[in-house]
Image (tube, rainbow, N blue to C red; front, side):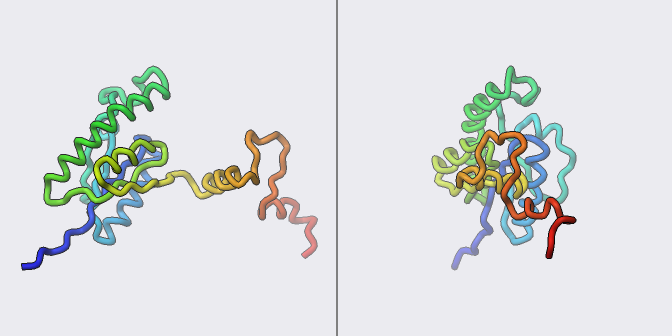
Length: 176
């Protein structure tokens, strides 16, 4: 007898800050609406501070090394990020192994752009990793222009941008 195809199972792992969680939670709901099984991943500290998330999307927690106080209990952001990478990588591997023993093994991980180390974990686990940019398209546009050399950084004060909207600064003086 032919085995039924199971839906893809995607881990979605936002950086543990509200401004990163909300966009990825909305994205996750879109994935779920297409039949993909989604499991949100967050830190133990953030999990304990969550309000009830809408829907029936499972949430799994991993350690970032600061399970009680979160980022605020670290000496500095640099110390937190280094510990998060070290402890989080191992904790995420363990979660993937645990989920792979269920009837829904993990197929891919969508991760926040602030946590590039997640791609290494995905590759070591034989999974596909996909980067998710949680900032607005305007920020992505700035990144693009800097990379293309069209915007020099640091930006010098009193610099007028040469973009489409800059041509409309003095609308009253325009002759159409």
